[in-house]
Image (cartoon, rainbow, N blue to C red):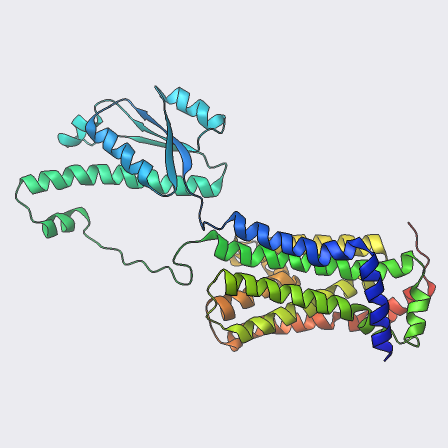
Length: 385
């Protein structure tokens, strides 16, 4: 009964404070829609590139048409020389250009190994790598086309030509994400990471405002000075809202957008529940360590931001410095992402991620180490702006 009364009191705070509405409902929905629509095509497409074609033959024009037909590349300009194309890259008009010197076709036909040059900017790592792949493919296609015509003129069969041009055939299997979609592996880390950030901040904020507005003694009195009852009642509405938002995010990306999830719905529900209670638990723990609205929210912000780096989605943790690799276990987002990868994305059994499940349980239990300090702070501390 006391928990319910405190929860109703907290609902009044939630209703009259726009901070809660924005950080618990509006911004999470906005972030989810923003990231999933930002990368809805899976990969960057039709990125601008240029061409310097000093050969100007049917063969060189054929190479340019093939380059323009690739999904990631779009030839937007022809330049008279390399200097003009280089300036275009510096002005961010194009990401790369292909330089075909005069005499390239003659060199191909006479087997003199002519050179064409590929220039691409690595200021944007993704764009640079994808355009390098397309430019290199076009260069190989040009030499293969000439070789194919030469061998066919000598009477070789198609099988003989294929064996000569590609002695080893590669059988490539992209497991889990055959579309190489950035949306599948970035949105499933960025959006939960931001939701965890909001849970950290709102938990610390709600506790800190009790001190700021001098309502902490009234709050504890409603629970007969039982800090466990007081915290349970205060955080119950937030837990219900956050878990609803988290499950709504999962339904949107795995149900509506059809992100692969061979691990099944049950595992997703367990992971969502553990993530929410672990995030709220860490927020309580951060406030208990430093019972100050400003300091606890700063710690929560820092911890959430570092979690994006140590999650391992963009750069593998095992390739980081050993100290950073060891410290990565201190961030809830790392364990969320590992469970998602192992049990949901790849469909492996629960036992393969037992350590990460245990870690989330430990984060959820952290408040028990600071309960007495939080109670003393609510009864004795004076808020200092």
